[in-house]
Amino acid sequence: MLTRAFVTGGSGFVGRHLIAALRASGAEVRALVRSEKAAKIVRVAGTIPVSGDLENQEVLHQGMEGCEVVFHLAAMKGMWGRFEDFQRVNVSGTARVLAAARAASVARLIYTSTEAVLAGGTPLVNVDETRPRPRRPVGGYAVTKGMAEDLVLAANSPELATIIVRPRLIWGPGDTEGLPQVMAAVRSGRFAFINGGHYLTSTCYVANVCEGLLLAAERGRGGQIYFLSDGEPVEMRTFLTALLRAAGVEPGKRSIPRWLAKLVASYAEFVWQTFRLRGSPPLTRLAVLLMGEEVTVNDAKARRELGYVGHVSREEGMAALRASLLSDSSILAGMEQERSNR
Image (tube, rainbow, N blue to C red; front, side):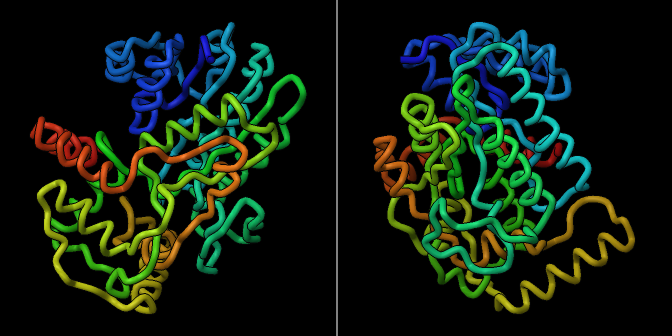
């Protein structure tokens, strides 16, 4: 049983759920925070806030002192952005976290990665941990998360066991990332299914993600990667429709062919790069690869080696999401406000 853990990204979607799971198990938790708002969030959860960011290795070291495990969740996410920003947070930040963990004599480090590291143009169908990363991943997020994975695996040693967990399409109550983006697209008239949404996807409910993270900390083998999912894949159209309806939004029936989506994404990226436009293109190549065609992962390794089950079914997760949104209508407003502030 864990007694003391350090979490980066603790005020985020997964981080808040992970802290709750750690506290429920009786562990003391320290969480890296960059703002007073984030500090308040983790304080309310019964966590000790550590003020600083991924660029301050001394703060990281001090926060990790006496901890058995580090959960490194903090990252720059997104389908678009300046490569140097992705690199600063995802690569340099991870290097500092690893250095601080070694200096603080932490025994285990769990790095939360993504299936996006495999996005290189070929559909990801029932991929497992043996699937090699492509030579040219698509997008700064995919490239830098892959670079960070290399650092994490290279740091594995008898003194510091480093383990990578890759959940696919995280969802659930408190989501301030994926669901608000899709909701905003629907309400602005920009949403369309790609190829009708008639292809399979893996998903991972946030409580199942936390289950996998805790099991990786307890049983994961150093230097290994583990995929996590909700089990059997689901049709993307079916999943997104249920997700949106839980939030009281109808997705409509609009659809565009995949070939057209890829063409639009490539052209939009070219225009944004050429004219250095602000904001993000309406569609990106990475978004098409991850959300516009089959992406299914095989989590048999996590089930075999970690004892991972994914205790919350997709149906139970949808019911919990609906209940959380109905119980506090301000959650939806907060989700959209947080998204609009980014």
